[in-house]
Amino acid sequence: MPTVMVRYPGRACLLGEHCDWAGGSSLTVPLPMGIEIRGEEARTDIVVHSELDGELLEGRWPIEGKSPNHGPLRFVGAAITVLKASGVTLVPTELWVQSDLPEGRGFSSSAAFTLGVLDALSRIAEHPLDAERLVEMAYQVEHEQLGIACGRLDPAACAAGQPLFLRWTPQENGRIAMTPQRIQPLGTLHLVVGAFDRPRNTQKILETLNTHLKGPVQDSDGDAVREAVATFAENAEQGAYAMQNGDLAGLGMAMNTTQQAYEDHLSRRFSSTRAPRLIHTCRDLRKEGALGAKFSGAGGDGSVVALFDNENIARSAAIRLEESDMFSWYVPVEAP
Image: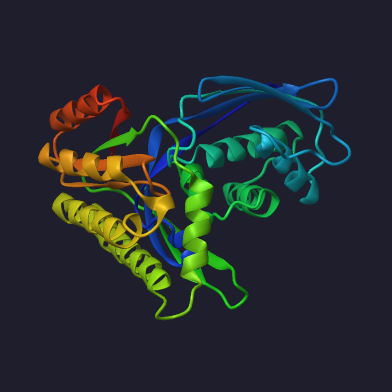
């Protein structure tokens, strides 16, 4: 079996965070940063050598028997379990993982990593899987095997590799049906994404919002979460229309409205979603010419995404974020 190389980019959620598990719509764009995995057959077991977020990690999992899914490489063990349950006969494999995608900042590093592991292992086993199947299996790894209160947005966006509009429809059985649509921007989007120096607690944010979303009507916390998610979904619809029609001002307005809803309904109410640095950064970016600036990902002081109508201004804003001890990237997005 020849060497297999797979790569999955991270993603920025322009609009519609949390709608993948609560219902509504989302709008995502790919990032230049991603995770690359090289795989080849080995003598025994599945062995992983990884460089994730600057940390060197190694692990070994048996082909037969139960695969442990704990520790920083827990996604590997969970991916092995899901592949075997899906009828993929795995073979001994050695994987080398490299990443320039920051972990825990809202750029879907876990989804990109999980997709890469599933894809590489299945290809080495000569049982390649299509993108739809990989997305569903990546969701099973995170949600069902590892108990992460997430939806399918992250793996779907990372697998698409281009702007993606998604509708999320709650079903009677409690599942959320996903309808993805690849979209093409009319003109170039000059985006800047930034990550704060410390990861926020994604799991805690998701647990908080899940709990209160299911709260009774007229419960103030539950109503606040439901109002926020409804605003996120509505603006994702408006933002997708604006993107396809070259209306940068309309897209920026949808981003700003979403950020205001986050501040009004979530950041001021729940400790897990407080984001003082994010709020300050969004306001500074607008003063510097951003048409829109908002949180990206789960929320908190994790990551920010801003839209500009000029490359030079966007690049200057990215430099200023770096000067304020953030990680930042200029991300042009255009029709493929």
